[in-house]
Each structure stands twice: as C-alpha cells, then as structure tokens.
Image 1 (cartoon, rainbow, N blue to C red):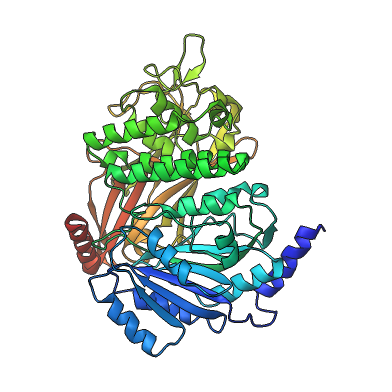
Image 2 (tube, rainbow, N blue to C red):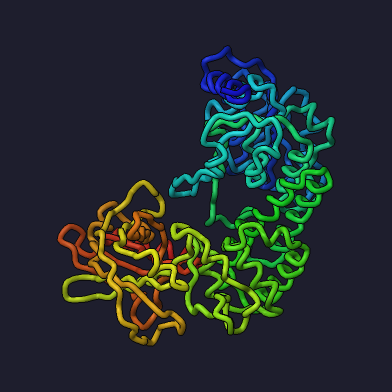
Length: 563
C-alpha cells in the first residue's frame, strides 16, 4: 500500500467519527437575497453542526423581504451568528461570498446558499478529513434534492465514491467537473495567501471561476463519500435559481464566459491537463445540456445561441478535438462549427441525450466514409467504427399503440454503419423507472430482437438500412400501483458476445401515438395515462390513478401553464 492510500485510510477512520471531536475551527458563510422563506433553515442547519462550527456569517445582499430581521432575531439568541447586510445589491453570488470570507476569523471556511442546507455531521466529516490528511481542501458528496418530490440525485458520485487524498489536482483531473464551491471545506489561510476569491458583481456561474482558481493553486485535497451538502432544486418557484433559469440567451453567454475564464486561469497557472479537461467538460456537460433544450426556444434564441457557441468553440485547437473524437459532445461541437446556421436540431438533441442516441439518416461520403449528413459532410463519423458496442450511440424507436389486448410497446433498433449487425443484437430488457424515486422499477419482459425487412413508414427517416424489432404489452395498472407519477423507459440491448448497452428510446410522434388515454381499473376505477416526449426526445409516461390522480394531473398542468 502506498503512502497516499495509507493517508486515505487514516482519513476514512476520522471522517467516520472514530477520532476525537474536532475543535471549533470552522466558519460557515451563508449568503441570501430575498429568501426569507428559507434563509433561517439554512443558518440553523449550519449552527446545528455542533461545536466544530465557531461562527456562522450570514451575508444579506440588501434584501427587501424582511430576511435581515429574521436573521437578527436569530442572532440575539445565538452568539455564533454574525449578520452582515450589504448596502446595495451586488446582482450575483460572488460579492456576498467575498464579503463573508473577509469577515471570517476561523481556520477553515465553508459556503452555504440560503435555500440549501447542511446535513447533520457534514462539518465534522470534512474537518476530520482535512486535518487527518493535512489537506488545504476537503470535499464531500452533494445531493440535488428535487422539491416537492424529495427525489435525490448525487452530484459527481464517481468523484466521491471512496475516501481518497489527492496530493495535486492534476493527478485527479475529474476534479474539474465538480464546479460547486459549497460541498467543500477550505483552509482560510490558503485562500487568502493565493488570493482565491469569487468574481465580483453580477457574474453568473461564479463558482466555475472560483473552482478553477482553487485548482490552479494546486491544493492538497481530501475526498470523502459522506453527504455534506443538500442542494434544493425548486423548479416551480417564481424566481428560478441561476442554474435553472436558462430561458434567455444571456444565461448561455454567462456560462460560456465562465468556462472561458476557467480555462484561461488553469492554463495561465501551467495546469495544461486540467485546462484541457475543462474544455472537454464543457463539451460533454454544458453543451449537451443546452442542446437538449434548444427545441424549447424560439428562432431568435437559437440563432443567437448558435452564434455564441460557434465563437466559443472556434477557440478550441486541434488537440481539444482529437481527444475522444467519437464522444457525443465533440460530434455536436463539430457540427455547430461546420454550419453557419442552426441545423439538424432534432438529431443533435438525440445525440445530446444521456445515454446518447445517433438517429438516422446515416450518410456516407463519396469514398464510403461515415459522415454526419449530406449537408455537413466535413464532420466525419469514422471514429465510431473503433468505439466499443457498449459505448455506441444506438438509436431505438419506441411506439405506443392501443389494442384489444392492451397498450402495446413496439421497439425498433437501427443499424449504425454495420456495427450493430456485426455485434449481433439478440435481446432487449424493458424496464420503467420512476422519475421521483429511481429505486422504484417495474421490470418488463426480456424480448427477442428480430431483424425485420425494410418497410417505409410515414414517420420514417431516410437512411436507416437495417432494423431489429421487438414488441410487448405495457402493464399500465402495475405502473399505477405506486400512485400518480412519471415513468421513464429504459432499455438494455444484449449482444451475441455478452456485451450490453443501456439506452433510452426515441418517442415516435405520429398521429395518435402520444394521445392521453383513460384505462379502466377494478382497483382505481380509471387510470389516466399520458405518453410524452422528454426534452431529449425520449419516451416517458405520466400515470394518474383514480379521481385524485386525475385532479393532481390537472393541478400540475395548471402550474406549468402559469409558470
């Protein structure tokens, strides 16, 4: 066992609470603006961390909703709480965080947003890890909690799967992907010695630049699998958070600028590998996320978005594009660069899905080389020929049809430049996964995939030279058993050599295919079923059993319309 592994193991024992109780050495900076409904919950979650927290610095960014009064009343009975009210609103999150950082007197500091909370034990776990590893930074697992459903999705779980100590960030380039500043504990003196601060003023995605500045200073970092931050996601509230409010093109402009600055910070510090990873992360994460939503925007937004994206990607060099050239984000970026006007948006949306789907047509150049399309032949798809079948962007159609024996699900797997036939698809596993609780799964059948003759259809796309099909009945009543909810279709294609590929299915949208249906039920009286297409083009089902379920659907629809 090497020295790093031994340190990691020692840190694990302390982070689990087996060491002595950490002394009062941590400050938690809580920032808020017009968030009276949640800010005291955030502050209390910091105070409840126990004696390890020496001080909580609550910075109010000139709120108008009484937030300061609530904080001052709380501070009257809590000597560890210091309230700072800024005289003018900064327009962003960076300035109030810097204000709080300047006021901190503790050896370590954390950051907390007013609408989030720290789970019990978070500070103790991070402080024990930092002290045990002699690290300038300790990071832990953040979970995104969707409200009101309560569904939790871990943020960057691969990075925080195990206890580890990273002597230099360049040895764990995945750190670039975790751009959050709130799931970490920092040695205050380290931040001040290196001048690591947030961008001032109205600068959305300020934590992207802050994280780059942190990694550029090459801190020793301890990583722990403990839950240390709960990020509340409230999509139905009147004022969306910056990360959720992506309806205007200025949001995309701000994100690209933050990513550009992060790259320049890392490159300027000589962290070339981290800088390359930051650009790759932009393609794989940021670009794909916004491409999935382009179909929701109007023509003016799409033209402006396309122009901004082309300008940003024009800064990439040959080495940036050469790395993993078959990755979906790189293919999308090359298509955007190759076309001066928005093109192939539905197909790009499919490729931006997770997992990616490369939908027909499958064009070829004059020499037979696979290319993106006849209109954009300069984007070669030749790297797909070397990609393992388990990583191919396979395209599967899903079609729901009512019938005398129930609602039937028809699946059709497309060929991809001969790779599918070469691998020999044999079966497909069908399952429905609950949107709000991913642990609830309804397993369908394992179906044989049969090659089928080429039969043109009204909704067909030219260029799909071969297909395999399967069909089954959907047990709608089983989906209704847990109550009202949304179900996502998940498939696993199994091949002749034992390899498999997890995919989602493209929802066909022909006449009547996505029509709402009322299904009789002895238990519920009636079950309302609404097939629909997600932002990434995949098939999903909303199910509402009984009269109460019908009313919940109506209320949810009204909320979406009003929002």
